[in-house]
Length: 638
Image (tube, rainbow, N blue to C red; front, top):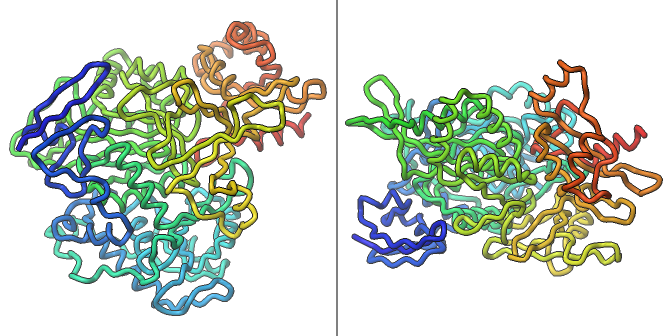
């Protein structure tokens, strides 16, 4: 079997002959009906059958049934706590949960829940650390016709009660480690409670004898695409958290969109760490189940740490290589950050030892928020020269690295490329539609932009008609198959969030550059300042200040000013070495010093007039700074 592929890379054209031995090198398994051909922007001709996304499972139940096929059910789907779980083991536990929920005779007044059988859209709270049980709990809820409401472990009790009462949760599923606390809280919310049955692992059933019996997978009859599947509560950067309702259809659309754009295949392995927010973990858990869509494996791990990430990369890709014979290869991966980090390496088990061999053709896709890259850079700079050389070599073996959730400072982007050789792929998304715009997987990536819309996504800019806006700039509006259905129990807010023709108003100001790439200017309410008649972007000023060698982090926003309307105000976190030097010399970083440095880079009216030195920036669960709250607090102090 052979095929010809032509593609361009870094300005050069290539023509390659694909042989069986090269299949995995090009991340394309011709015999796998789930997998899409590689190089979606290249021309491809082959004597082999190709498979498009259209031939893949399109709905929840199609994916479930695909995962329960004998050829797939015994495959490893998840690794967690040093254990492996097959698709059949996950689905068996999910089926047990789907039978448990209706049998509890859920009857709660004013919640629209029927008694037995079909849950009729009852909201089911799920509390668990990143684990097989969390995924099984979500899937079991869906199979029984319920709506999953993941409850963040980081919520204080008052916020947890707000979410549970607001979403009218009828039943709480929890793992044993949170059982006692959650049972008490569930009682206060008049909700029933049960522990999630443990998912049996391949360690407890190494022969995989617990495969699903034929016909066991059957969903509730009302499980249709337009029905709600998830209620995800926003992180509250613009006010009190709201419940974002996603349907089975919107979830499926997002999974297919990302699988196509970023070419997820059966060689991908996701290593998922709960780092900065339950929304990220939630997206991961959904994608975990839909890993059957492309047959990739997910491994849940403890929280992200700079030292561990660099160490894993060095171990996965040792500079001198390693050899092993008669090895049993088990593929795992690494996830860290807000979205996904897919680090592919092979763990080779020989006798009683575990060693790792480098595999140059495997995929590593890493999604992080910008602060995570900044921390990795700091960790790299603290290494000795030998460790730096090993770390840089290992990072250079990775295929793709992404950034999102907040603006990527260009100094961070440039420094990361200097260290690793990787030009970070910046993309744009939010809870309401997950992802909509991205720099290309193959093609020019432009610093300071989030790229172009995904296929099937429509975007437009609603320009400011007040007369004081800049032509070509305005609020970004999005229409996408992955768009959420509504804000839970907030019909008026939902209505106000959409245009008459169905575009969602993101609340983010943006513009389009000369190449059609979108540039996010910031939140229309908090990142756009009106200073003396000028309309300024806080993100633009932040990007310049972050170029200062002594500044590690900064946050710019407008504070009330009687003469100019608003004053450009900056909170600055100094580099740790600079802090040490200032403490030794008993000096302080001043506003005058900052402005003298920035005056050649910023117009006079863009220079900060107020400076605050803080030890750290206050961030929410998604790693974002709530500027609206900062403006309120600091404005009241004046």
